[in-house]
Structure formats: C-alpha cells, structure tokens
Length: 500
Ligand SMILES: Cc1cc2nc3c(=O)[nH]c(=O)nc-3n(C[C@H](O)[C@H](O)[C@H](O)COP(=O)(O)OP(=O)(O)OC[C@H]3O[C@@H](n4cnc5c(N)ncnc54)[C@H](O)[C@@H]3O)c2cc1C
Ligand code: FES
Image (cartoon, rainbow, N blue to C red; front, side):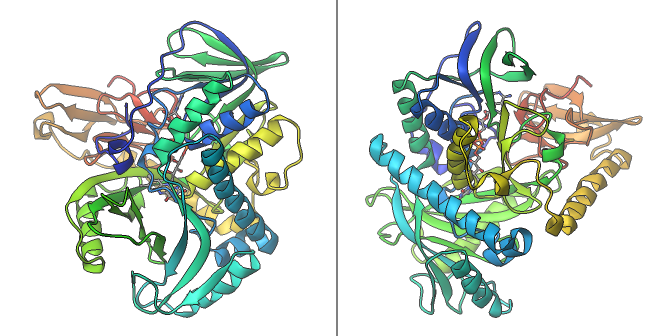
C-alpha cells in the first residue's frame, strides 16, 4: 500500500492490502467519488445501494490516507465535548451532533453485519477523565450537557482503568473496529453492486457545466458524471472551507498487551488530550495510545512525542509488552468543531466532506448517509449543522484565532534558513535553505543525492517544514504535505512543490 508517511500503523500491519488497478482512458458514471478513505467509500456504498452507477478513484489505494492511520474509536461522546458544542451550535446543534454520530456507529454496525465484513466491530463503553489540576466541575458540566444531548452517561468513581485519579464519566454504546478491514469490505460490497474502484488514479481538476461534471485525471482521461464527491480529506480549491480549519499532527503507539481482556475507549481532557483503546484478537491483544498533537509544520520532535506517549502509557497500564507500531497522522480541526459535509460552496453537483476534527470515522460514515440524501434530493435533518458554507457567529473568536494562526506562518518567508549550506543536511533528512529571498527545500537521500524543490507550498504560498518522523514536507497553513521529492501526499495542494 502506498502511504502518506514513513511510519506504519497497527492496522496496516494486520490487514491485507486492497489494490485496485489504475483507470485507463475515460469513464462515465452517475456519481464519481474522489478518495477511497472512510468518507469516500461510505458515500460510494450508500449511493450504490440506491442503484446509482458509482466510480471511485484514489490517487493511491483504498485506505492509504488518514483512515489507515487512525485509532478507530467510534464515538458519539464528542471529543470536543458537549459543553463546547452547546456554546458553538446551541443545545439543538449539540443534540443533532450526538444523534448523527450515534447513527454513524449504528450504520457501521449494520453494514458490517449485512455485508459480512469481519472488521472486529464491537460495542464498548467509553470513559472520559479530567486532567490533573483541572476543575472537577468540568466533568459535572459535561455530564449534564451530554445528557441534554441525549446520551446515556453516568459518573463512575472506580472505572476499570484510571488515566487519572478522581473517577470518570462512562458513556454507553460507543464502539471500536478495524478500519482497514471495514474499508476492504466496503470495496467488495461496492463492486458486488456494480460499482468500480480504481487506485493509482489522481483527480487533478473538476469542472461543472450545464450538462454535468468532468473529473480530469492526471496523465490522461476524464470521468463524465452527474455528481462528484470530493472525499480527499482536504479538497483542493475550496479555499473558503479550508480557511475554517487548522491541521494538527497526532501520534499513536501500539503495545503488546498480553492477557488483556478489557475493552473500551478511554480519553481525557488534557490539552493535547490522550486517547486509548485495546484492539486485536484475544490471543494477541494490543493497547493503542494516541495524543501529543501539535500544529502541523510547527515542530519536528515526533520521536520525543512518541517516546513521551510510550512512557505515559507504561506509567498507567501494568504489564505492557513491546511496542509493535508507532505512527502519526493528520487531523483537521474546524473552528466550530464539526466537519464540513455537503454541497461545495458555489457548486451545484460537487459535494465535499472535510474537517474531521479527530472524529473522522463517524464523520465519514455519517457523510455517507448525508451526501446520499443530498445527491438524491432527499431531506436530511443534519444538513444545516454540517453545511460547508456555514459561518457560526458563536465561533467568531475561533475563526479569528485560526486566521491569525495561519497569517503568522507567512512570516516564515522572513526567517533565515534552517541550514546555511546544503552540506549541513544529513542523509535521509531535509531542511529549508535560503537562496536570496527564496526558501528552498533540500532533501538528501540515503545515497547522498540532493533533491531541491521550492519550499513554497503550491496551495497558498506558505513555507513548508521538514517532518523527520514521516519524512515529508509539511505546510503549517492548511496541512498540505509533500514527499521528500516534492510529490503531493495530502491536500489541499493540488500539485507538487515546484522545481527550485
Ligand atoms: C493518529 C490518528 C488517530 C485518529 N483517531 C481517530 C479516532 O479514534 N476516531 C475517529 O473517528 N477518527 C480518528 N482520526 C481521524 C480519522 O482517522 C480521519 O478523520 C479519517 O480517517 C479521514 O477519512 P477521509 O476518508 O476523510 O480521508 P482519508 O482516509 O485520508 O482518505 C482520502 C483519500 O483521498 C485520496 N486522495 C487525495 N487526493 C486525491 C486526488 N486528488 N485524487 C484521488 N484521490 C485522492 C487519498 O489517497 C486518500 O486515500 C484519527 C486520525 C489520526 C491521524
Ligand atoms: S496548505 Fe495552504 S498554503 Fe500550504
């Protein structure tokens, strides 16, 4: 499987690759879905079930994006918390968020059962802990807000594990699964219904005309269709939506957990927060710990963060064995905490799903149901809450903060280079060098060959930074990422770094 980084997740190590051929030539379909992660494949599945002719294209292969790097908690106990959702979206909005994420978990359960997908789906409880030194009233407030949103939640003084002392909130009917096995099952189901799935097929442009849409493919070829779903995690050229979210790197470590029988989701209120679950068969259980997030492109200390997570876990979970995998990935945090799912602003037949907010599994599954209804012109009570064009007045402070955070990174143009000479870049590493006014991304490969690209992100001109953990060039502004030679790994950039 092609990947968006150097590290590999637990899921990549425990699922067979799903490889589909490149689309050769042109194609026609009712609906073209661009991107074969949880959002794209859920949407393709739902639309195919309604008898629509669907084609899915992915620049890499199904599951090669962030869905392969998740930790796959399935929760409608929202990680931005209900007190915050009520502030940003009102009590009704918080209720709709809980209902729609709950429906997403139900949908995954039903699809896994009906399509006989062996994806280790399991209903579990979730426990939320407050961070040391925090006002204990935080949990009390969250308990009331979560109940107002319709969740079954209780205070538990003696939870089965303690991320921190002081008890926790226990949320019923959360769930867990193996995301890549689920995606493999969706691919099979889509194909059984007559849908087509292609890997190694990058969309480079979408044109919408009076008689339909054209998806232009890299190299040659196009797909003519009535509707296009951009499920690329971060769609290119939708600047107004992209501007309402910030990219974060988040880290995960999987440990052998011999003899562990407990199952559940565990997370806390620290900033950045920790998230923990068990996985694997009873003969080989693992514990997966995630957290240590930082704003993309602003730090290059992934190894320290992974070590910090490992130490944090060993202090709390007795008897942990070896580390089996350590990885990182990217989440997009929308200013008002909920994904953007619906009609792309300014379009009639182009649909997007982005802004996962660390709950991309449920956002992706609910996108499948919501986009299906919108494409089929059906009413859906969730549409307003997730509308990509929304501007929430209550999130004005968050929009301002994000605008300032992004604007600040344009000052990187004024900074000196990270190294003064190409010779200072070690094999296997990259650094930004300044040539006059121009920042240049220098990568020296293991053989010593130097690769030079412009360090200016092709999305909107911020300066990229080297990420040694994933061996990539990462842009702090909206999260575009490039491989060491400058090819695009993550949008919203639509093309690679220019020659230096
Ligand atoms: C460490 C980590 C832990 C997480 N934990 C959780 C969790 O516990 N629960 C949860 O709900 N969420 C979690 N998330 C978030 C979740 O994993 C993501 O939000 C989700 O996987 C995003 O799915 P997606 O389908 O939107 O994008 P992706 O899975 O990234 O899929 C997008 C696809 O589009 C393809 N693509 C991109 N550009 C093009 C193009 N131009 N043409 C064709 N194809 C293209 C890519 O190759 C990719 O396969 C976590 C994320 C990380 C990184
Ligand atoms: S991702 Fe927008 S400028 Fe780089």
